Length: 317
Ligand SMILES: NC(=O)c1ccc[n+]([C@@H]2O[C@H](COP(=O)([O-])OP(=O)(O)OC[C@H]3O[C@@H](n4cnc5c(N)ncnc54)[C@H](O)[C@@H]3O)[C@@H](O)[C@H]2O)c1
Image (cartoon, rainbow, N blue to C red; front, side, top):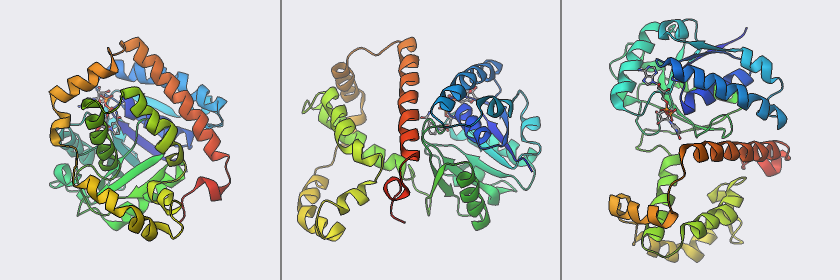
C-alpha cells in the first residue's frame, strides 16, 4: 500500500524532503503556514524533478510530482501520515509548539521526526504523550541530493522507532547513520564545526586567502572524502593502518590540538575580516543562480557515484 509522508514546513529543507519521499513512491503532504512558501516550493519542485530525471535520479518526474500535495492545514496534512518530518525554523519554541500539535493530530502509529540541525529531541518532546515515537532525523542541505541523515533519539525514543527510521530512510534511498546518544551538534556539524573554526582562524589571521583555503578542500581533502571517510582515508596513509598512522603522526596532531582555534574566531571582528577577504557578497539573484549550479554539480556527482561498483562506492562495513 502507498505510504504517506507529512512534511511540515516548505522552506529549503521541507521542499527537498518532499521530493525525496515522492521519488521513492510515497504520497506526500507538504504543509506550510505561509501560502507563498507552498507556491515557491511547488515552482522549485517543478523545475528540479525534470533536472533530476536528466541525471537518472528519478524515473518519472511527472509521476513523482503528482504524488506531492500542497496543504494549507496542518491537521489535514498529518491525518493518515505514516511518517512526519518537521522542518520549521531552528528555534526551540517553534519546535516545541509544533510537536505538541503533531503529537495531537498525527495517527498514533506515525513516527515524528525533526530536521533540526542542533536541538536534541529531549528538549522539545519530554512532555508529550507520544514522546516515544519522536526523534531527530537531521539531513544535509539539500537532502534530495545529499543522502546522509543523522538519526538521534531522546532517552525515551523506543528502539522500535529507531529501527523503523532506519528502514524508512533506506527505503527512500537516503543513507541513515545512528547517533547513539544525544550531544550538541550531533556528528556532522561537530565535524563541520571543527573544520570551519580552523578555516575562520586561518583566513582571519591571514595565513591563506579564502580562495586558496576553499581549493585546499575542493581539490584536496574533499576529493577523497566524496567516496571514503576520513578514517578510511588515513587507514591507507600508513602501511599498518590507523594504529600505525597514529604512531607516526599522532605527535603532530597532538601539537595541533594543544593550539585549538579560539571561540573568538566566530566573533564579529573576525567574521568581518573573513568577509572582507572574501569580497562583497553576491546579490539574491546571483546566490539563487549559484544554488542551481551547485545542485546540477551535485546531481552529476550523485549520478556518478551510483554507477560505481559497490566495493569502490561504499565504506567498509
Ligand atoms: N538550511 C540548511 O542548510 C539546513 C540543513 C539541515 C537541517 N536544517 C534544519 O531544517 C529546519 C528548516 O530549515 P530551512 O532551512 O528549511 O528553513 P526555512 O526558513 O527555509 O523554512 C522554514 C519554513 O517553515 C515555515 N514556517 C514557519 N513557521 C511555521 C509554522 N508555525 N507552521 C508552519 N510552517 C511554518 C516557513 O514559512 C518556512 O517556509 C531547521 O530546523 C534547520 O535547522 C537546515
